[in-house]
Amino acid sequence: MVTKKEILIIEDEKEFAGMVKLRLELLGYTVSIAEDTNTGIEEILKGNYVLVVLDLMLPGGGGFTILERIQNFPEKASIPVVVLTGKTIDAEVKKMLERYKVAALFTKPYDEIEFEKKIKSLVPI
Image 1 (cartoon, rainbow, N blue to C red):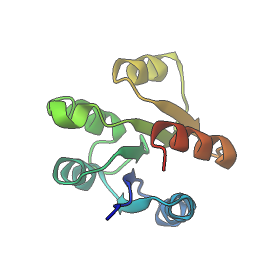
Image 2 (image 1 turned 90 degrees about the vertical axis):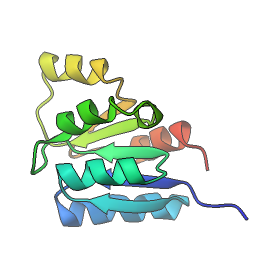
Image 3 (image 1 turned 90 degrees about the horizontal axis):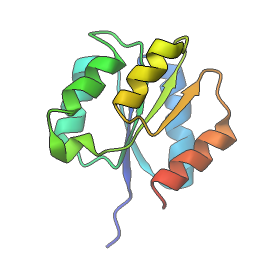
């Protein structure tokens, strides 16, 4: 039996997260949503996710807190992270994202086609 590849979206805007979830499900992925920092960390640690779509502005600490925490778990630190955020991306933010080896960065509003291409390149169906 082939199991679908699981993606975790960590996003506090419910409608936006739902739209991204539907887009990924239509591509053939299984998708879960976490709405805050702590839930996102818990999900990553207990789940078998092949990719995380991460907002940087989240209740409870934010995306950088998640990126930092998963570095402490070598088996989870290698999960590709695609940042999808409304946060202004300046040189300091880019430097931090590079430090955490983020696989891709998209800012809202984002190019859905490029987003899909990137997800499929990181986690082929």
